[in-house]
Image (tube, rainbow, N blue to C red):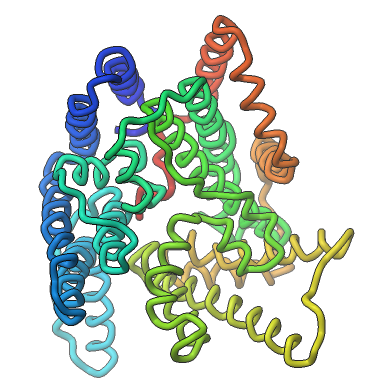
Length: 473
């Protein structure tokens, strides 16, 4: 059930009206209704995988109290290991089994064996990376004594399956969301209006910008890079960077808006990432729920800056981030590139400290240049992210240095969407706050009129139910 489908519109209106008008004061019935609704939402994608999310929920719900009750650190680690092996094992089977088999076949062929291992007929369940990480955050937080085991299986099941963020995040941690389920939500003034403004903003990002960029620039350029000049190939990677950002942050806005109308809060997942002055800062602004998950549970778990080699820890963390995004060597290379860039930045900062030099600070044109440089580095690595393989990425990069190409034309609609995306991204942050406040202050009839006008405009612009980019992860 895609967010931009008519099916979801009817579903959301039924859920919102039921929760707000009939069940708001009946906390137990409300949570039961939301749990059933969330499973219905997921089963609309593929009913067979409801058992999968249910199994991951049961495993971690049972193991949570056992970690707390364990009378030794060794036993605590054992139960945590069971949780991680079971949950990540399910994820590995569905997402990475064929990648490992294919890699093994390539290795066997290289050393002279020609009998290939058969690939598995496995369908990747939508959102499995998100709800798997969400569920293991529960046992990890219990192990680290950041949260207590929850007594209600229904509350835990709703935490894992809550439909707004179920298939593409943000990755909500148990210590953040479970307390919201264990106490009645506050009656926040204008929560519905605030949520609707987020939903509208998300659909505008997705349909009016991301889908237009994909249709008019990204898809045609990446389909045949040899037909375009180096300049337009740069335009292609810039367009893809903004497509991914507008698409994914648009989904997050919709998810946060839907959750807010129902009385719950989800974390902010993006903070103007292309304003970053370093690759390290980029990862503090981009897909924050995922990057902070790997930072807190993997990087710090490996020792961070205190144990082992910090650069090895960084590389392991970023390669894991790359693999999380997809089963392919291009994603491994993507993580390796970012690990190398962040490691270089760390080495450079440490070197300045050893020499007694102040931390670098950028101002004026120097600041603009630094932001542009970081954006270009991020965009270039996205060639690995967008291509289906390393070979595709090499083909694109090779075309970027072929200055003899007579370029094909590109759509001016796509160029206009790219300029609009750039302008919106670099506007002052306060404008977003002011827009939301203005929408909330509008009389109800103006709000309704604005919503209807926006919906019809987006329907007119829509090229169909194009899936969100991160559904594949």
